[in-house]
Image (cartoon, rainbow, N blue to C red):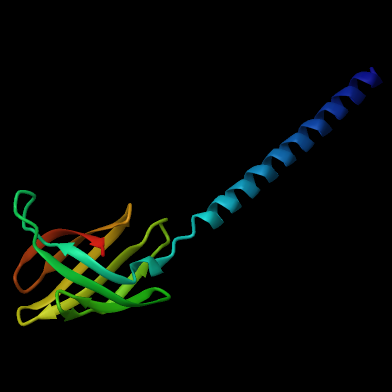
Length: 140
């Protein structure tokens, strides 16, 4: 009877060791993957061709988004020849997401975008002219 308990105890100890080894391997792999997936917001730096066409059938209507500074969770530059204010960056969800404000005589424009496969896909909400527009941008 004692030998049965000894074998059970050895089996339990081996299972614990295997579990510990597997858990360590998973944690190490996850940590390496997370480190490799660190998103760099400085990919925004430079000039982007923004296509502001009003619908998919319309011809391209290109304006420039120029990002001159990326620092921490902020950025600055110009869009449609207007100074960017309150430029914010979020990389917490595995990709670059931005939001910023520009303005003209009609009022503020609130913009947001996400970087997917090297392309920005965004929305602009014009509070003065009362429209919401989709846009996309590729880096020059």
